[in-house]
Length: 629
Image 1 (cartoon, rainbow, N blue to C red):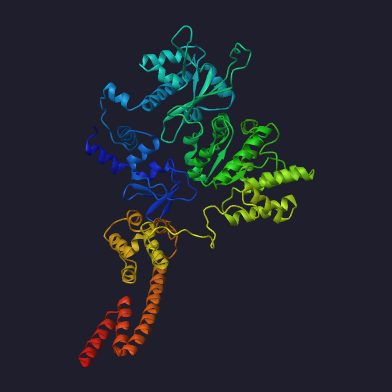
Image 2 (cartoon, one colour; image 1 turned 90 degrees about the vertical axis):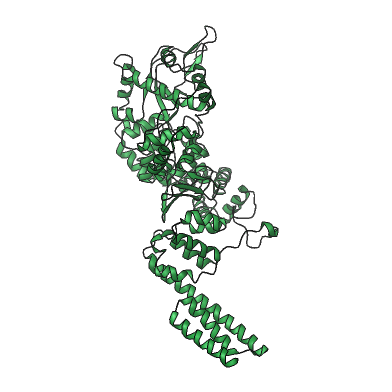
């Protein structure tokens, strides 16, 4: 096992915000950080990270823990593996632990697979650098304009034309070739026995995830390999098969290399293929990624949404590129992420047809000297919904049947927009583009959402008059605190320097909710609101406190003073109401109205913290009681 002092040293040095930031776009929310949870699909952020305390918590799926548990949970690592990874990153040497074969086996195939992928990557890179064996690979890269820096950045390699080069290398490293076969690096020889290389005469592109691990490969043929026995051409690309480490629907090529630029630029540019990514990075477009040879998936969109604010679609200008654009557009709308479509360069008459001229792909455009033209196309990207509307309009002008089909297609897209205000705005845009009454479009959207006669789905929003089945008393959700008191605590959560201020101390005596009073006391003693809110409050109230809504306040102390004044006014009004009630009761029961009045004034004075008035009122009350006796 790893010594406690080593674990504590890693924990103290590890920057949990930096580690989680590799997978999630985190934004400052007071003393904490907030983003979309990587453990479950969500559209509004509920994942919180405390840099001070070194832990995370998700209000959606309830996952929580420290930097070790985050790496273990997200990347499927054991504690030892997580410690080794974090130690290497933050400069803490973790002594090598001698493990028995049984323990190694118990850790599972996943560890062995990642190790084999690492060895294979090193081998392909060595071959590419070799003066003789890598000549064809280097010539191909030179032809595509890929320099040494990008070759290193993407860890590109070359698989030689022979059948056993990689097999022999893996054997020399005592690798289990059966596991290598599961990774798709080698394949069994059915007649002769043994194994042969699956990648031959191909440029090998490792699929690297944030954190640096190689989860698979995408290998492109570069020579003229013989045809198959049936006369068919070999595939241009061979990707790794599905395995414990390679999930094609979840991975994106170039994500590790583009992540920092994506976060810096606030966007991800999505293209079709590996070499589109490599060539565009070479040309300075460093926020570019691509799916791995198949149609974009919702999992890949959600991954991008966690890391950046918007997605720009930059697909090829052919029919397949247009279809891919429309498919990606619908997924982005469904995931509620801002999506843009790059304009076709030089085509001012039409908003349609995809981002490029017919038959042109981004890689070819850059190679022909069109980098600036492409940059302009990306920078002037059109809103995805608007692009769709004009595409529909352009194809629907011919006849009524075409317009009907176009409207139905558009309605299916609009029905996926959850925000009702946004849906209404887009519906209006579509109606104008199609030159039809807006009511016709709304009816079509209602049909597409399965609710004829309505504007579209109000997902997650109940109608004010909808019947509600009350839960049993034992299952009822705790009542939320008064909203004005919750706002005050939310302000303090975002500005911890105000917690011990005179204004905040004054506010404490005005809080009527015992949970908020307890939270303030604990926060004043040094505890974090990120720790306190999930324990003390109902989930919606806790999310409100940690929403970060006051993190950008220009004058937080002024807002605090205003909130305190509001609470004072509220307490004064309540005291006056109570005074009227008690006076009426005193008159009916023969009590002393003057004593009641003084007691009510005393309650208000205490709430305001006016010590001098409190003392005066207490003296008057004592005097009245003596006279009554």
